[in-house]
Amino acid sequence: MTRRELVRMAGMAGCALGFSGPGFAADGGMIYGVQLFMVRRQAVKDLVGILKAIRQVGFAQVELYPIVYDRPAAELKQMVADAGLGLASGHFDYAGFESKIEYGRALGLKYMVCPMLPKEQWTSVGGFVKAADDFNRWGAAVHGAGMEFLFHNHCYEFKPLEGGVTGWQTLMGHTDARLVKMEFDLYWLTQAGQDPSAMLAKYADRARVIHLKDRTAGAPVGYEMGPSAEHFTELGKGTIDWTKLIAQAKRQGIRYAFLDQDETAGPVIESMSESFAYLRKIEA
Image (cartoon, rainbow, N blue to C red; front, side):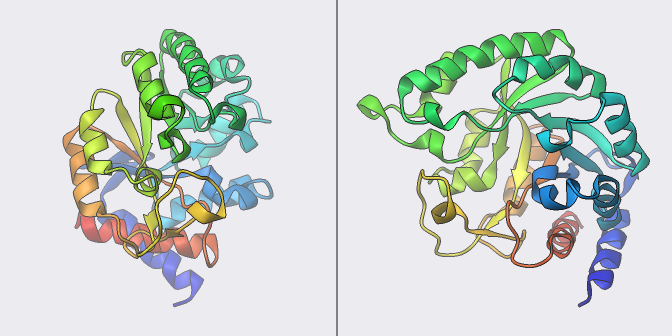
């Protein structure tokens, strides 16, 4: 199948999903988008073009990534709107996060997400305690600006540290659940040997957004980041039970799901189109 055919089919799938406008599903169900990290190489060269391509595939939202924050908020917000996309969420680096809160407010975001801790904080309970303290402070400031603060998990947070305590346990135990919410990456939960369904249920009061990418069969679990953890594939081609997880997320009131396949074997637009066609299939 050619690239043009894939894009055309995915666009038809977008209509079938019932999107009635930028970022809104007509049936009040899940709103699907793309995290710009997935298209980071294309976005730095032609942001307008890649935003239009995301909408043409059929996705209704885009989740921002720091590579695009060199533009004034009003300009960036208009670029997204001109592409026919909604804008509810953005990732912001840990370093300098607090200085970006006004920028996030100006973008009109619902969610400001910290996607990763500095690597030097991954290896000790103290590093995660520091992160928890920062998250509580940032969460209060983000809340005061009319948004919610979210943390995006990977797999390193689940590695046992001193006394067998994990970074995840430390974060959850030291953060205020009213101020620190979660963007659950269901792939990375699975990679860490966690049950994503159980995690969504246990932290239902924190769960706000989910990230989607599938995981190849037979891949080993682990806590280390890097090539040994990268078993990515398009939705429906791996082992994660998306029908179950998306249905559960909807029941829990989660409205936003972002495709975030870090690397693709073929061209990224074709990959997005395949995943979107699968979402259309399970939504039918």
